[in-house]
Length: 150
Image 1 (cartoon, rainbow, N blue to C red):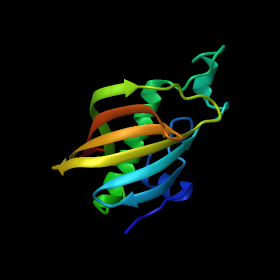
Image 2: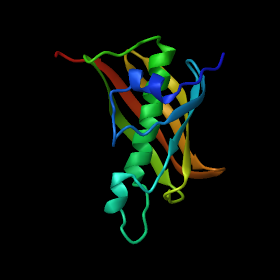
Image 3: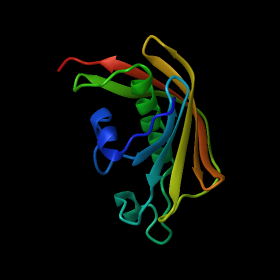
Image 4: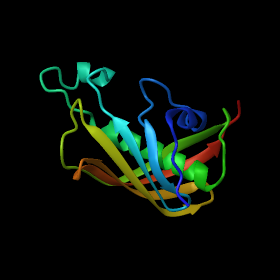
């Protein structure tokens, strides 16, 4: 069964807020398998002021962060977890990151993330960020879900 999420549902699962929330909508999700999400890239993004004023380009690290946020949504839904303020979802590793196309204002970034493995709060994913049919970024991600003391 596939699942979609709107921004209100995303805000209930992710602690990120403007300007760091990088997932606008989940188009499709198969629990325990994969997710397809969107990030609408607008000229209003604060990072464009400095990256680069003469030719605005979305930083590659933010494309990776957007994929990690999509991965977190997939993990929470796959494990039927609604995180609270004592749960964090950390980046643990990024391998094989490749940037193949710049992402500019007006682009719609499609985030495709698949689960490779989930075990003991550590998850490995294969992710891609596309503009249309062109791959902008791809990487293998590892994330860790941890409870923290408040």
